[in-house]
Amino acid sequence: MDRVRICSVVAALFAAPLFAQKPAAEDLFRDTERKSGGTVFFRGSVAWFPDDRSNEVFTDTLASAGKNDDNTGWAVGAGVDLDLSQKLVYGDLLGEVFVEYAEFSTKRVLQTTNALLGGSKTSRVTINQLSVVVAPKLRWECGPVRPWVIPVGPAFLVNSPPSDDTTVLDIGLHFGVGLECLILKPFSIGVDARYTVGFGRSDTDTDYLSLGGYVGIDF
Image (cartoon, rainbow, N blue to C red):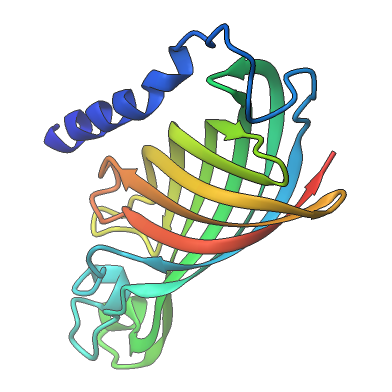
């Protein structure tokens, strides 16, 4: 519960600007009549687990013949930003739907099913995770440059292999911050940092951080 409370406080701090009233002064950053529109984007990144998933039954059969203990990997994802036609704090409120596959460790270890039958065969086991995020995104138009922030959004997580409890599903919270630049209509490029906090419903570690870059297509 401590983790949930901490995430709630952080989310409240990030979300506060979403409810602020727009000042009456003229917008200095962008044309208020201009519609932001939406974006489809494709992302690649480096990803980190805070802790590795070694010494679990299905990741390396309790490390009885090697440990699947890497906690640095890679991730690929794609998403869409939809314009919600709301102008807040000089920015545009968007709705993001984002799907990402992250892979953290893949080593040859003792195969669990074989170990249950008394064998010693090893096989390559991959530790990975699928994340589905639906979140609000506040994006500012500063000429060709567009900084943005995701204050908080729900994340639906699928981890593989299963945990020691043979569960694979978790829920959590997703945070993000990034900067993108329009290079040639309708294309843009950007960099971002994203962090997902799992609630531990699958009884294994599902938190992870990713730093990456992406290519967007505006519509």
